[in-house]
Image (tube, rainbow, N blue to C red):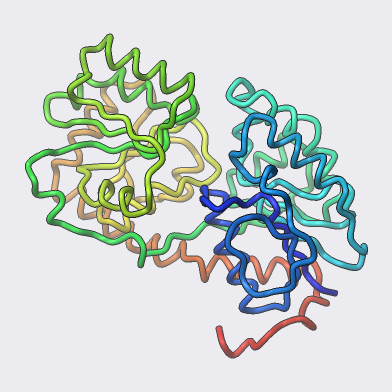
Length: 365
């Protein structure tokens, strides 16, 4: 028994799914002898069985999901091989595989990506019937998969995200420049709920600017721009498109707080990246963020002016901020990529003990 890792959806510019995939599979490659269905992203050591065309990588156009699905239908490996996909992009004709469903945002917000909704509504359930197990990134999403698809809970395993604290670290000098701002990372789609932050601008506009990062052009961006104009916030709100790692890092390091007002998430990585930079977090009071962030964030009741006023005020309290940051350090020691790979290894071996025969050198990790 040998593991085949399906990375066909990865492109050269890693998204959140790409970062998870690269870190998990790189960790696996240090522990097991792997084969790959390669994409166009970085690839750890192992044997490449086939390579996907560039046209099926994530973010390669409007119909990329259909192109990827049609291409993946051509692949079928020996049933004695275990295929693992670190995303929900599995192989339609492969029996006994494992896929990773990071969230069900597309199922619950169908208008954001109608074509992706079709995949989650009709094709993903068919794919799951061919799976020996489904992986996900949080207990909240595990329960959502069970409720939405009826997939057995005992066959859903949680393999959480991680944060590289070597890549995200504090720089206090950037916060002392006399230009306080609040930061939102990821604002391209309605479920990110950036509009509510603008609606609540009376609670922050006197003391802070607002930077909305990784908010590329689209219908929701245009809606937000209209709100900014109508509320007279043009001098206080700045939109930024796709950012390099260093650009994003500097924004985290200099922010007075990260705002994360999402209506739904599968996990929520930006708050942990902010905490690694010792930046306070204000997050929506939803179950998955309570699960992931625990006592490390100030939670805000969505739609409540009083809650928003209290949350914004909290970041001026040194004791509240310090308590949250202390709790944040505990979280960062929990949500590491090594711990994620440990959980992944345990899950894979519990599903298929014969993978033990392809282990490399256990003493080296």
